[in-house]
Length: 288
Length: 146
Image 1 (tube, one colour):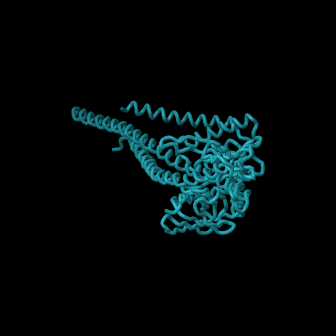
Image 2 (cartoon, helix red, strand yellow):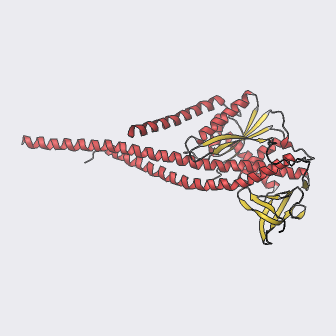
Image 3 (cartoon, one colour):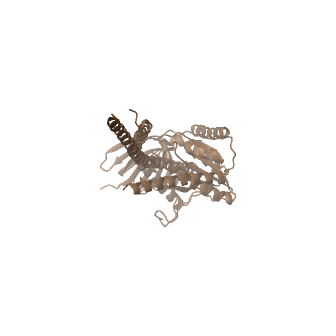
């Protein structure tokens, strides 16, 4: 008896999909926890280096670093941090929308734009729609090392110190909570230090620099930018996992709905077939 | 009671140590430095080596760092440690690699340098509309069911 064979096959296939999505949901949930831990582990470095930088802004260095100089803008650098893999809801779409808006804005003021892309999805997006990608980094995995990112960051920092670009921005998803991630743009270079932030000691002082001011400041500011980008990447991974978890949960629920709908149809068809068979038998018996 | 200061040792990937200590010894590029509380402000680069701290009560602790930056304020000392050995040529190589990859993918794609705002916007609008529709359908389904 082959009642509703097509429906049964379809139910089976939806069930298989549901198994996959629920597995992905659980994987994403456990990865999200780890990613969140990593996110909070990177915070102390960023906080500390920020404090050092704000001290620097309050001191009176004999040497003015080029990273602190505000120049007339002709060319803008943008670092976009996207994910490597899809199936994470509207995460990348929202990010690219923010990127497009910013770029549209810059293009209307006739700035040229250099893009540095981190993550496979971003590479795909800029490949489809053009845009001058000057450096890229993909396949950073779930546990990125800062060394993995240095190359692509260095390209942008070098471009800034050589005067090829006059501003550097960072665009990534900010982790608000598990349900919400918002694309945010940070102004990396030239450094904007809030003068009111941090304690103002009220008298003139300066650091002792070893070996000399230029060397130390160069390195400190480089590390500062690197740490911000690294933090962005780590945060984006936490966003990716939580967005994926939510998307996969929705997919699993939808598959469940679909299955119950299909089962209803299948049972109706089965009943109809049984009823028909019965009435055939009964009417057959009556005829005899 | 002896004087103390606060020390933070952090790397980009994690916090290594944070607490109150009496002394810090760190391998600065110009030679090892020993820091006591109320040291004048100082900013210096560190060589790979050991950071030695003496905690309140005289207990000694060692941390290996592979370079970094040391910032000294009278009552707070910050060690920004690198997680890996950093060499100029290695960084340069990585930068070249990142550039090369970008060029390669541009060639494969055969696209222009000009960002096509209109195309991007229309595609994004489509994607967002799709997401919204899915959301809508879900709500409707949920509403219909309950």
